[in-house]
Image (cartoon, rainbow, N blue to C red):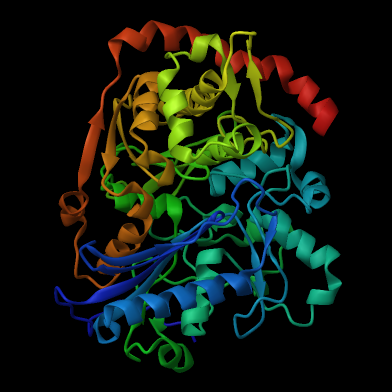
Length: 518
C-alpha cells in the first residue's frame, strides 16, 4: 500500500546521512551525503555513454548501486547514521516490472523508438508533425504531447503492450527509472506528477492538483491499471524493505522519499528555484531549465512547463540529446591516442571560432530546439589547415552554439531575458568548456562546486525538503559556486558570426536527414 505521508516522526542531526543515488544513461553515481548537502563519500560508475544501448538491464542497475552503497557504508562505518534514501536520474524511459518491482524486460531508454509505428498512428499529422485535434487537446490539458518519433514513455508502453506478448502475464507496472529504484528500496509502487510528466498523461492545468487525466490516458490507448499510483512529491513513500535493510546493514526506520527526475533535481542542486532563475545541465545530454509562474508550451521549440518544486509552481523542460557525449564521441572516434587532458589542451590551443569550423552535435538526432530523430551531426567548413585541435574545440563550441539556439527558444517561450545561468554536470568540470559556454551564449556562467557530483548533493537536499529538515529558502546558501565565467569581449564578433550560420545548417540539411535516416 502506498503511504505518501508527510513526515512528522523523522528528526535529523548534523551526523545523519542520506544514501543519494543519481542514475543516468551513462552510469550511476552514489553518495553518502548530509541532509544539508555535504558529501561524506561518493562513487561514480562510467558506462560507455557514446555507444549506450536503447535498452538497458535494470536489474544490473540495482546490483551495481547496492554494491556501491555497501562499499561506501563499509568504508565510512556510517551505517547507523543513515536516515533516508533519495533517488534522482534520467527520465522519459520505461522499466516494465512485476508486482514485486522486479524487471520483466529491459528498460526502454529515452532514445528507444521501437513504438514509432504506434505513436505515428495516434499522434502524427500535418501541424508541425502532429494531428491538430490531438495537439490542441494535449497542449490545453497537459502542456506537452507524446512525440510521433516514438522516443517517449507512451510509445514505450504501446510497444510493450502490443508487441511484447511474452511479458503480459508478469507485467504489472510501467515505471520511470527513479520510481523503479525507489520501489526496489521499498517494495511499494509509487510515482509523482514530477516523475510521470514525461508520459504527458498528467492534467497539468492546476499546479499542486495534478493527476492522471483519464481523457489523455484513453486517447493514448494506455492501460490505466499499469500506471503507478501517484503520491505527493514532497512526502515519504515508506521505509526500506527489511531484506534491503539487512543486506545494506542500515536501520529499518530509513525513510525513502519519492524519486526525482534529474531536471528537477538539478534545479535544487544549482540553487536556482526562484522564478526564471536558470540552470544548465551539461552531462551526457544537456538542457536549459528554470521555474516559471504559469503553464507554457511550444511545439515549435519542443519545450513545455511541468509541475515544479520551486516557488513558481512549474518547471520548464527541454532536452538536447548530446552534451558531454559529443566530446566523448570525438575522443573515441578521432583522438583515441590522446588522454583527456591532452585532448583538452589541443582544444584550448585552437583559436576561438575553431578556425571557422562549425560542428552540429545532433549525433543521435535531437529533441530541442528541434525534434528530429533523423538529424545527424557533422563538421562544416573544414579546410586542409584544420587540425584535431580545431575539430575538438569545434565540438565544444558546437554544443555551446546549440545551447544558445535553445536559449533563444527558452526566452521566447517564457518571455523573459536570461542573463546568467548556473551550470552543473560532469562536462562542467572543465574550465575551458565553461568559458566556451559563456562566449558562445553571451551569458555569464556560474559553476556549481563539484559539478560532477551535484546530482547526489541535490538528491540529499531533496530528502531534506521531503523530511522537512531543510527549507526552500535555505537551498541557495547550501549550494556553493566555485567559479564565474564571463563572456570574453574579444571573441564576441567571432561567435556572433558563427551562430548566424548555425540554425541554417539544420534547415538546409533536414531533407537529406529524412532521406538518409528516416
